[in-house]
Image (tube, rainbow, N blue to C red):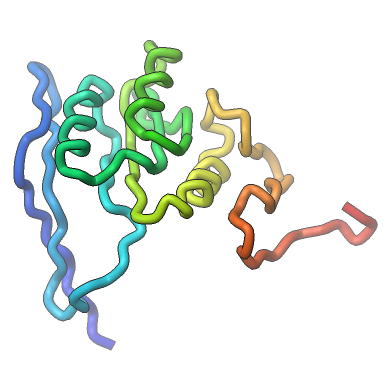
Length: 168
């Protein structure tokens, strides 16, 4: 089977600059040769580990670009570790979270989803994967070997669930 060509990155505009370290660029990925024309995407827009100081500028650009602002977001500490994961109106929720933990949170990531129905499942997956790192999430977090509640996923999802032989 032939290997598909890698996507190419095209930067269109600088959305944010600070006087010290960071620029936040906006662009898009173009399909490589041999990839099919129209495909479905899980995410419309993503931004990973952006400085919180750029939040207002990124929100303005995303809104002006017409992408919508609902999705999944992650608030990171100074080492880049996730400390809070949530879903909903990304930029409003991130601002509220930063205000609540002003000194602890330095970066943010966001994922604007193509279909809102997947937000909850993506959030659940991220929370379960980050587990013990999340200081400010208590809902859905699981530390140790106990699984989470399968009902955290959407109705209609097929699943495999571990059970003890002598009852739950």
